[in-house]
Length: 136
Image (cartoon, rainbow, N blue to C red):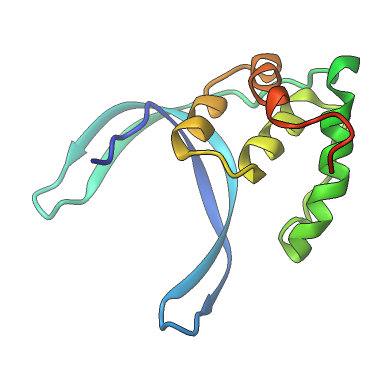
C-alpha cells in the first residue's frame, strides 16, 4: 500500500513523448523540497495538501573521505546521455553529490526517500558503502 511521505520535492515536467506501448513518457526535474503540513483526500480521490517549503540545502564542502563518490559520478552521469546534459555539475558540494547518487543508484524508493530527508553529510555516510572505491 502506498504511503504519503512527510518530505517531498516539487517537480517540473521538462519533456514528454509517446512511448511504443501507447503510454506517455515524462521527464521531470526536481526543484524544491517541502514538508507536508496537511493532507486531505477529495471525494474524487485526488490528494491535496498544504506544504511548507524547505530552505535550499546549504553548500557543504565534500569531505576528502568522500571524493571517490564525486569521481564515481563523473564516470556515471555521462552514461545517462541527455538526461543529465543540462544539469550544472557541483562535484565539490556534498549536498549535490549525495542527491545525484541517491537519485541514480538502483535503490528502493523508501531508501531514496530516507536519503531525501537526511542532511548532506549523513546522506553521504549512508550511500558511501554502496559504492566501491575505484568503481565507476
